[in-house]
Length: 117
Image (cartoon, rainbow, N blue to C red; front, side, top):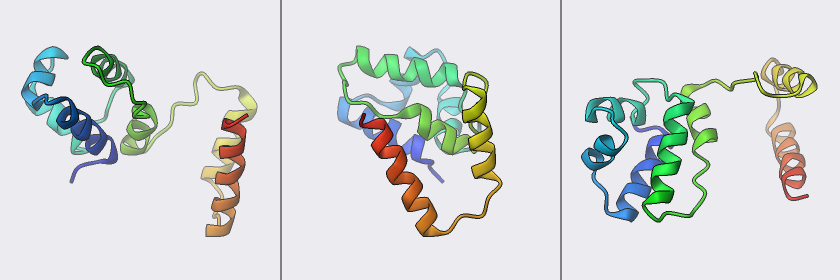
């Protein structure tokens, strides 16, 4: 089953007219490895995400695909290492709290407003 990360990468490849094989060659990985990451059978390393974003920019795709966030979702983990301690604590607290749909909607609004400042 293709992940959201895989869907975004596939869509970008199609938009640019690039085959999976061409992309695998350019990123110096096997076609099987590329496919496994896109289909959630392998974790997606951050280095690979950065290489993929840079590749798409070199190929002329200037749209922000938000691949890091999609990779985090596909990997089902978020790296806390480079975040401030209070942000790390907040993320852990959210992860350990059962939230209603309304709570999630409100938190999403707060984050959207914070990003737009």
